[in-house]
Image 1 (cartoon, rainbow, N blue to C red):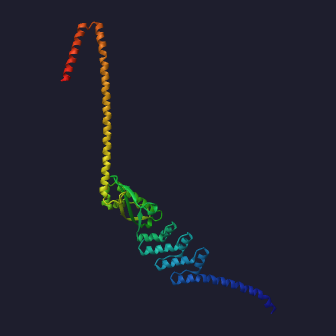
Image 2: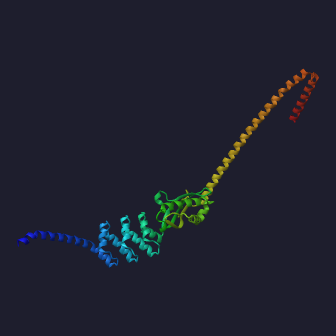
Image 3: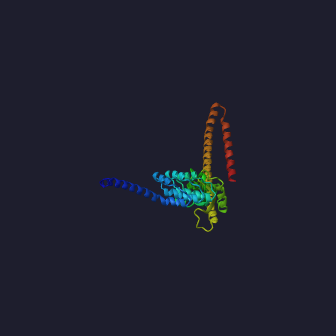
Length: 338
């Protein structure tokens, strides 16, 4: 009896330790039994040891099991290893599985490695698959960028305001490393402005806006982007500054006629100024010629004096020359009087 009383503390300690161990095992079992039962009943069996290993590796077993159940029920064989690796890499396991299921139902080629890479690159892989199946429409220009219309000028100098809508489909092969929607919007806007700038007149743009969209669509603007351009539609086009005028053509023709009139007036004023300048130059030339004549006439008396001194001219010759000059002057005065 004394031996039993002496041994009772040891027995009690062993019982307590065994009880604690049993409680720990029971708590672990109860914490995983719900997940294990869900996996077992769904046909996606996961062992207790695997569940415990996930917990020890810092992985939420419920997330991995739920993702595997979704994939397995959709007919996609999905082991837990890749799911655990993607979870540890910081990926969204549930979103990747949803994307794989959507791609499988839509007959799109998408494997787990590519879906995981897209997800780790910061893209919404499920949204990308949805966009690949159901193309989305984006506005050009982006209304959140502060402007609602593209500003372009045709070759005849008329300013046009244009708004386009671009239908794009996600390209799963170029989703990693491909340019985003901002690049698509910028390229399409540049293409529309360039196409309108090459149009001979604004009337061609207003009459056939499809020519602009087809020209831009054929330029291959979706190269190196994460999207494939399905269509480009001109949603709105108007002449800048005359949106409230009923007869835009008449107003533009009137403004053009007024501009032509001012241009012709400026050209005429320039020709008038050139004519006045030429007239003044001719008057200056006449004055210069007259000065030369007077200068030449001043040399005549010197020549006569030299002839007297050299004996080549006599006094009678001089008088006869004077008579001839007087007779010539008289005849000139008579002719002017008539």
